[in-house]
Amino acid sequence: MKRKRRPATSLSPPKSSPAATRLRTALARTSFLARLPEDALKALIAKGQVKKFAKGARIYRRGDSGDSLMVVIEGRVKIGNTSIHGREIVHFYAGAGEFFGEVAALGGSNRAADTTASEDSEVFVVQMRTLLPALKAHPEAMFEIVRTLCGKIRVAAAIIEDNTLEMYSRTARGLLRLARRHGLSVGGKLKLSMSQEELGRFLGMTRENVNRQLSQLRSANVIKTRGTEITIADQDALAEIAGSPEMID
Image 1 (cartoon, rainbow, N blue to C red):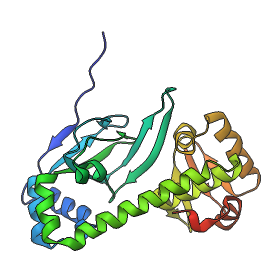
Image 2 (cartoon, one colour):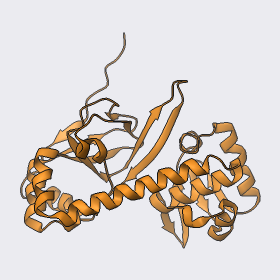
Image 3 (cartoon, rainbow, N blue to C red):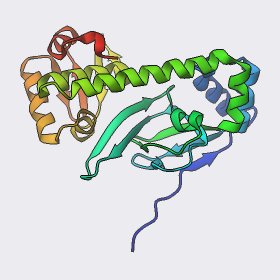
């Protein structure tokens, strides 16, 4: 018998509590929400929901109604699709402070991609019927959404270009892009936690090919690896291998 996946935990944030204060602080770091006055942000929080997703849990599927926008509070979310050959293709990762689902939400259309928690994640969900009045009243917040969306389109175009490169350069570009967006700076070096399978889905490469390219980068003393942790030991050398570093966002 097929087991049903347990639904995500959904919590309405209390109006006044340490949890509510933590939520306001986290959301205030999100680009477009930071443009809202404190009262407007509090109003959105009061009407929104916090949902927790275990690693691997589906947040929404392609074709689902796109009536809400979501912000990552903690964790990392994977946005992608499955090709007609059954191969998963990752378009984007959203980390803490980043939002997703805006294309369908603002366009009044259904979701165009599948979205999954790539690690245990906490997400704030706000319905567009609640968010739109706030955006209309504060157009600078709407502009931030548009600006971020343009940045995602730029990255998507760069990734298409990346796929024309040979694997060594493609791997270098992908690592730089992911580390700069989702890595941690430890002792002046960027560290990224990601399995070879995940990296392969983002790069459009098999796990075996990813393993070979990482091995070459290790031999060149450009990166170090330990389990799923990748440390960029020499950013300048990695950027040189990547080529056209200005295309890496």
